[in-house]
Every structure is written in C-alpha cells, then in structure tokens.
Length: 55
Ligand code: SF4
Ligand code: SF4
Image 1 (cartoon, rainbow, N blue to C red):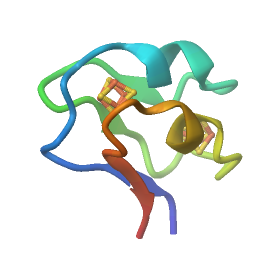
Image 2: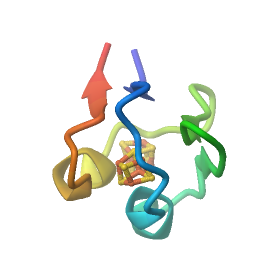
Image 3: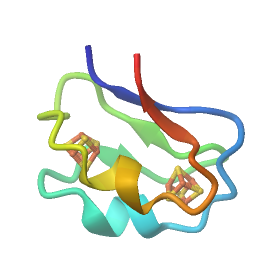
Image 4: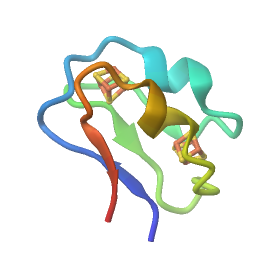
C-alpha cells in the first residue's frame, strides 16, 4: 500500500518538493497518488507534523 496524508497536514509543501516521482499534489490536505508512489519514504521523514504514514 502507498503512503497517505492525513488531515493533520498544514500544507507546508515540504513533501511535494521531496518526492522523486511527483506523486504528491497540492491541496488541504496534500494528496499522494497511490498509483504513482514508489514507497520510497522520503516524504514521511520530512513532514514537520508527521501527517504522512504508510497504510
Ligand atoms: S510535509 Fe506534511 S504538512 Fe507539509 S504538505 Fe506534506 S503532508 Fe502536509
Ligand atoms: S513515499 Fe516517496 S514516492 Fe511515495 S509520495 Fe512519498 S516521496 Fe513520493
């Protein structure tokens, strides 16, 4: 399963900039495309509010 972003997201944009495959789109909250995500984990470790988790 891909990584997902919870409603705790504060839309800081950090994860989007980190994603190597541009799987993250802007919004409130930001959203990860399950089809595009390669589960590298880069976004999860960078989120300041720990809103990203692997489901
Ligand atoms: S890094 Fe976290 S708080 Fe920032 S946009 Fe991504 S999910 Fe939201
Ligand atoms: S786990 Fe990696 S590929 Fe998936 S959304 Fe996060 S940064 Fe992008």
